[in-house]
Length: 311
Image 1 (cartoon, rainbow, N blue to C red):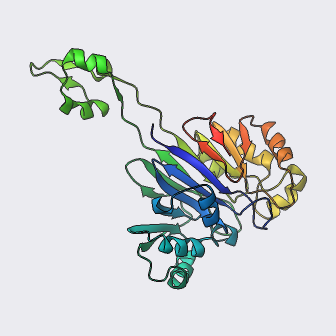
Image 2: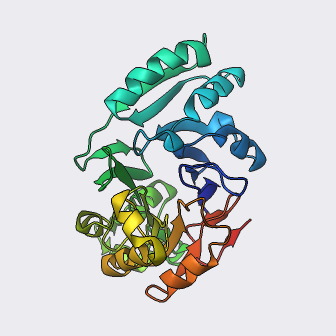
Image 3: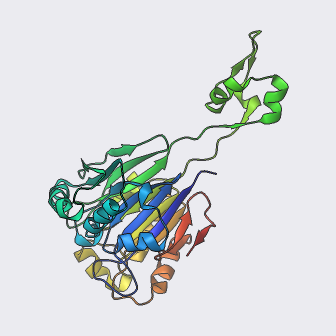
């Protein structure tokens, strides 16, 4: 089965702690790795989770607060040492690209890969597409320009009903068109409906990453119906005033976003350093949205199987 796995490398907020690394995730899409944010320690976390540097081709940076991208210079240097070839694209705001171009001269040296920048803005847009997925930006409500990302699988192909195609005498060359939903026409001109020769495709899965932001109706509208949502929960309700003053959300507010957007599963992250135990945040969220779990460094979530996640 094609792989679609979320790897949590860091789920802390800006102030470093011994418990959490800053924000960083890696999405494994059919063995191609997409990094979302790149806080300090990202490359070490990749090594611990045995993620292959050679599979990294795209990095998406949500905003330019340091805990979301200060790991990039070191990662760029390490990718050069791993002799990554081909191209690496960083999707980032213009100011970040300008700074990284200068840093890359020292961090990457004479890198064997081509470093490219895709300049993003705060207006929603599709910023990446391949044969498996699309990546769209979502406007967040933060102190600096910030976006979230929605990754959507493209529609998958239908499954061949082997017994039916053998009985109908369908040749091998017609299988791909059947998977794409086309009917089969026999040499005699008889049309055999696709539904008689195939079964439904597997459902496509979607994942939304929203950190850092106040609760936002724009976010709710943009992520309607996604399967998985990672939403910041920097504080509990006991620090609601601080959360809003700093343009963050509480765990309860993250759950309200998930509920109002009709998502299936919620993952909380971006925890404040003031918490030595996030279980109260989890209980706070689950009172509103029961299918909630806490992010943890080293956590791997199979987005194709809601019951499968490991540490």
